[in-house]
Image (cartoon, rainbow, N blue to C red; front, side, top):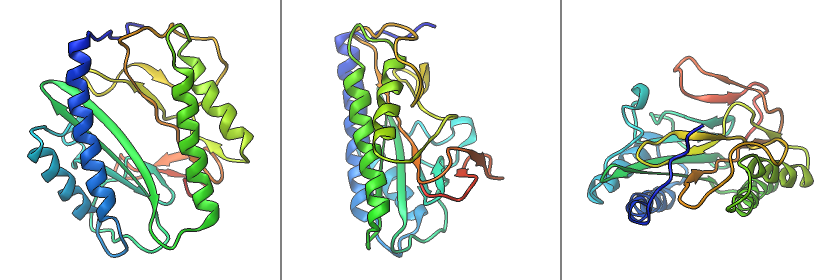
Length: 230
């Protein structure tokens, strides 16, 4: 497994791409409310990426038709924006990427459209906190599997949640998806040793029910088999 090592200058270039992703997600988040369509959110993201001097690394990727992924309720990841109108209480996950000078950025957030259900809010808090546990485990000298182990350990300590098995994080650099694949579960102490200059997108995904998923007929949208929210 060859994991790309970036120089300091390359890391600075990556930072610019990720700052554009951050500003795009902040703008999309500010516009999420009951009544807006997911395609309108996509248009907002596309305009901001263009305005920031970047290009989308999602649109056209293996035929993907949009700039962001918008996944709602039992849709866990890769939801395609369309004419779906957001409703009060919806759990909305938005994933976005951008390229500047050949270097890629990729990030996501999840929020709840008012009013906020307490059980749903707790799940989001657990998932976000598990991300920080994964980041803390990803230090120089650690093994790649230490990240997923830390995520799983924290999630399991907080209650009964499904942790997705088929999807996870990845390396990123001059391509959006690179080695290594980063699971959100597993035993510590396995895989390559983490070195300075490696860059990872860590992507914990959990549900209120089963971890089992399926892909809809659009060949992109991943939903829980038991219809539980995530």
